[in-house]
Length: 472
Image (tube, rainbow, N blue to C red; front, side):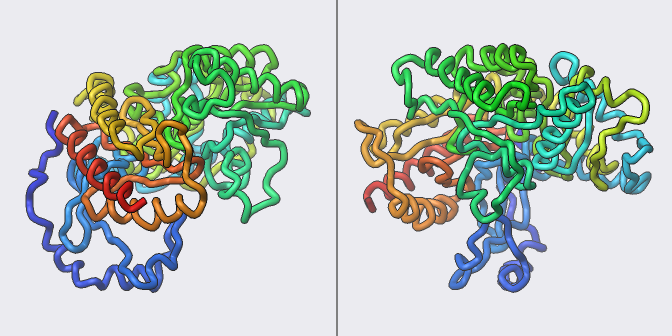
């Protein structure tokens, strides 16, 4: 599979060379408020400025090349520098740059909605566009509440989600998120969001010697939470196909089938949050298809356009849409830029690339190779667990391999922020060192990557992790 239309070994562009005088980094320090960033980090260092991308690589303003081991932020599925996506955006902007979906339609939103309906499993035929994943999650909770009010069950408003799971930053989505540190500064949040255990088998509190039994135990905690809160008050369960935060927790065999049974038993909507896992990350258009379960709602974003323009969506079944088609009812919710014409056009062109280049099939064929390559790192004393699926993996680091002892907060701070994040980047790998949960390194490369890139990732990780252990 070719990486890009361009030669990835070419020199940095003149524009980037001109930016290399540090002016951009200084301006960023003076004016740019970066997301999820300790701004004090740059008191005595430059802000990294990425100026160009091509295939699976990115370049900074000094001309240095890095392998994009996170696909930007689980986003750039088709790789950087795809001129056909830029051309699709320019063509649409010249025809109809903007029009809202408030009581009117435009062609690209209609075409994209139809295409997504055909790709989504079952009767998930109704597409509500947003501009991102957090908005899609927010929309899903709101539609679940209103759906039950319109169908005569107004008390059903609570949601169940999993510990350490990340579902977004809007107040509703943040309430569903299961990361205490991410929520503490913004409380009180939206009431009614309750948490259950996730599927981290490496640290299973029960059935640590039986993966399937552990999965059924974890699923049954959802039923327990619904019973405890009262089934007449619970509207939805939110789960990711592979949970991102905490370091890529895949579902045990039978887990989602049991969750589906539980949701049916208690008349609760099953929401599959696929903001990361949709559009090829697990080798399928939707992660729920990868694991064989039928959601009532899917939330998605990121990879829909490979990041070339922002868009998200909440995809609902015909059953959920039905009461909104009656009389004066409407979903009292919307976004100015939801289903933006340019973003919709880019999404359609991106899905054309998926079909033409067989990106899903490529992930299915080479995902096991990616796993095997990363599992070579198991010989390092600092590596406790390698887990994930498709092109989506987490590597958990430990102090003691035999006992699985983790690092305390101070050690984790020094390991991740004091060394690993910068060392990996300096070594030429952009990825994520994270401690929302136990310390992990997360990897999510563009879907065009092949064995040469897997090897490059493994070699950089081996070198940096070996140095990290020696420092400990």
